[in-house]
Image (cartoon, rainbow over all chains, first blue to last red; front, side):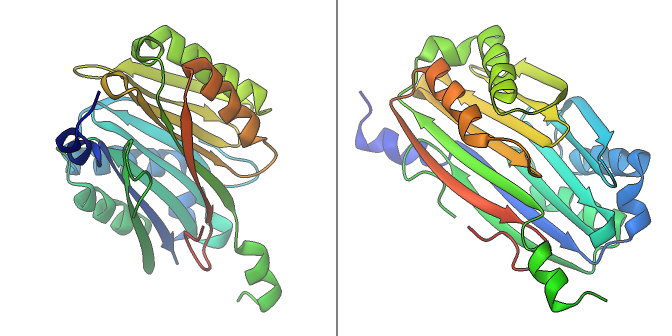
Length: 128
Length: 128
């Protein structure tokens, strides 16, 4: 059984940062190699340990994929036709997600970003 | 330039369902093969087209990974020591995320679930 102290400690097993990049360079978002490279640089900048990655072209435009890191994952979906990218960075600690997101913002030339930070855990779940 | 009609159409480029499963069977969450198989069955049940997948053991316990689907991705992180799993299903349409989540709930024997549905898109971003 878990006690009150355990419950407090459990409230944020995972940290989840969701970012929407708007006003990006369409060409950057449409290029599989550029998106892949930017995501790997972002993981590195965050201090994450890359386990593997998978990216693919998305029909009719855009790129979709994820970097699996030892600390969790970093996923992206791009809509070059809307100059838009949705990024998720899920971490169990020990990484600097802001640094990773800055790398992506610069790589895509994003004019604006909107972010939502969530805590993931078994108590008071999915609270921002 | 986008007009008002376009803006309405753009408001939900992606659908993102975040689920927290609590009270799961610890053994199911700790088993790399079982988690991988459950996630692939969930993607199949949702009607998604699997592109690739990657799962790995997480230190000191648990499993982490993602299924990249043609329609976006399905990611999981499990904490067997807390009988807890955090799942993300990101879709650009055409899949039944609820069916996929039901497969996972049953596979893990989850006693409870908490969910948050977000719309991802360039206007009115990250709104639930």
